[in-house]
Image (cartoon, rainbow, N blue to C red; front, side, top):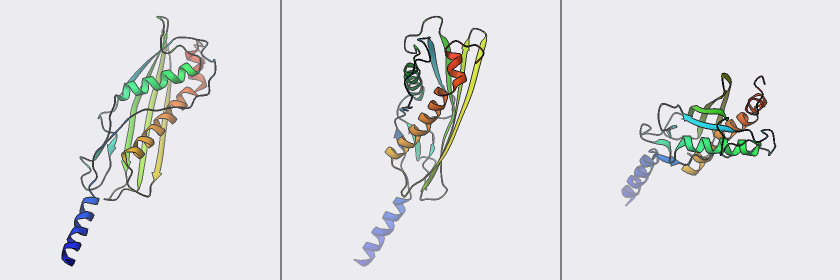
Length: 193
């Protein structure tokens, strides 16, 4: 009986080091203070996911090559919807832009989920790069928004916790874009912000 308990405990420890893949919903919700900075100017938002792979990264552990953190929905659509809602709050017409609309291309260049080394993961780093390029005629205005955050956790993060962390860093970067005064002035019609 004692041997059986020891074997059962050993089996539990061995499986505790293997982490399963996770699907998380990308749904950033940047906090934007409502204002009429856009004066109903049209902005056509185009979102691009320029990352080289679908997964954000691996959860680590013994089988790190398969224990991936991946989006369960379309990242581009979630990004575009979030930016449009933010611009709408700032007084732009981002949902029904006219033919004279300024184009705002928002590119997710990097969103890396990096766990600490080892079979037990209590620390995760997230690195993100968001690029924005606004175009009106021959004039272009660009912005780069980098974010990096380290999370120290008492336990290996669940899918819900990973979803929260990914959406937090995305929301923060979109907030930086929407709070970029020069970008907002350009979108509002000032060609030399």
